[in-house]
Image 1: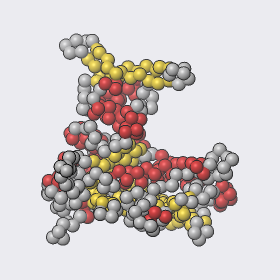
Image 2 (image 1 turned 135 degrees about the vertical axis):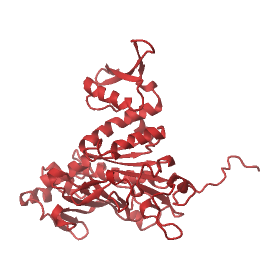
Image 3 (image 1 turned 90 degrees about the vertical axis):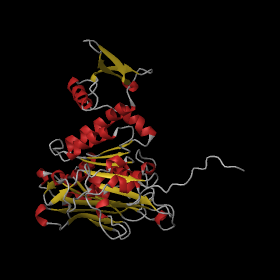
Image 4 (image 1 turned 180 degrees about the vertical axis):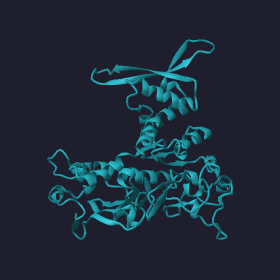
Length: 424
């Protein structure tokens, strides 16, 4: 499970940012806190804030870290090789001051393994600039060590340090020979089948992201189907059961494989099956003619299924888009209910839906806000850490939604009259 995600100098976030999913010592909803080893971890983090305040950039930072870990083994090389430096994608730093725009961007996670891994904690991170990896580190803490981390490896481009002492000696030569400036040790080591490094890489493989604010990604997600959906009737039945929790009018799916015009590739034609009123007959509709909310729930299903099975993290931007608040609540229950969420999956989502800011749904340490100042610098902070003008922390019996919309917690837009037309 993810305990903490830290990053710095990425897009609108110039300074250190911490998204902490470890549970604080507050009293509400203690039954949903997940205890692994010596840690108490939350299954949900909800991020609220004004438009352009940086909510999506939190997701993009996490998405970039996952991308770089999974892909960097292919970065670097000579121009005449199949793998070229053009594949390397530098993260976008904070561009609005001279120092930050040439400084590296940093990404770091703390996470905990499962029972088979004896609930060991890991700390992994790296810094990247236009030339590649500036720094990279991996530390491990056994359950019995209680917060004391031991170094597995460390590298620093500026000092030339490369310490691989926590890895098998037989792997050192291969790593040193193959390591490029743009390549992460974890990514390369997983490719070389070094178990400790493959374990870290595989942890990143478990995570899913979905950005419903991006029209291109939104289109892709709407056409993405669960594994086995086209051929396995049992998979389609599971999807029907999923839909029945909010729309029992869909009783099945008809799937047809069609050849593309060039005859080389196939695509799926998916129809939903509905029952005719007062009859045993059925009628089919093209999936794309279903409501926008139904299409979104269909798009969310593969990622939800994946993280529920693997215990991964689902990061969704604009989860509330095109979903009724009660449907959104029902979706979150999959993560909040320990009887359903048996593998300790987590969801981190952004939203504009203030109705979700209910003290009957979320803990104070599950609620986060983004705010951007006049210099374009975003910050991220938790409701559990927020202190009001009188120096008091927020009580659990407050009306979070009302106080948020009144501006008590910040993170709302400063509205001015919209001057659509002006007189000369």
